[in-house]
Length: 305
Image 1: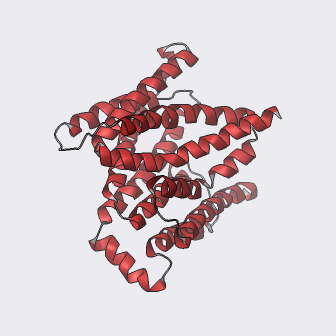
Image 2: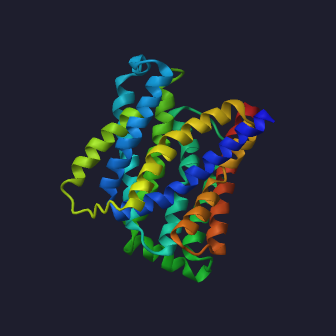
């Protein structure tokens, strides 16, 4: 029964992460993407560093990491943070928002793919098919499920809001690179520079925001969402996830995390008052299937040797 309690914490964490896209959309629209990212990362960074110092007894935890970890992974983290808010601010229609949510959750798939060149992992040839399934999910969600919309889909990508979708793919790719390079550069070292990265990204993005005409509408609702995003999503969720993985049923928690695209799609639609259409759910399901299939491709290759 004790294990079930910690497994439940993992499920709660997944739901918290599922709310992030909707809050990112609200904050980037109400405050401006650079201002929102700067303030959220400043608050979150302070909370994360305070927790790390309390848990690890001092700054010695930051020693031992190579310079390339701080420079390269730090740059990727800042890129991820900036594009995460910019991409959500650039989409406005229902179809664009739902498509962007799914694109942002391609990062687990990209993370697995990048283990091949970065960590020298091997995968089954079926990996290409799993990637195709996930990308088909994005297309179906954007098309609305109608075959005759294929031309409209590519026309929209090429001549419409293509920059927003490009930003969405950068969000997923930057986090995938960050994850793999962190593993490569740190190995078994227990160094976590996220808190420092958040503070640095806050300074850089805050400086950029000063030269841009962003709305900066600090209403009570947006301030509340900002605190939630900074504290609950950036810190509390990560702590709960670590506890659930260590003490709960890891198989159940990890399996549930694969359904984040569907969970986030439903939560985002509910919070923003958007319609949940069958093509969007089908697209999210294909993204999930593609991700699980890609994990199977790596696991199967490891078993075969």
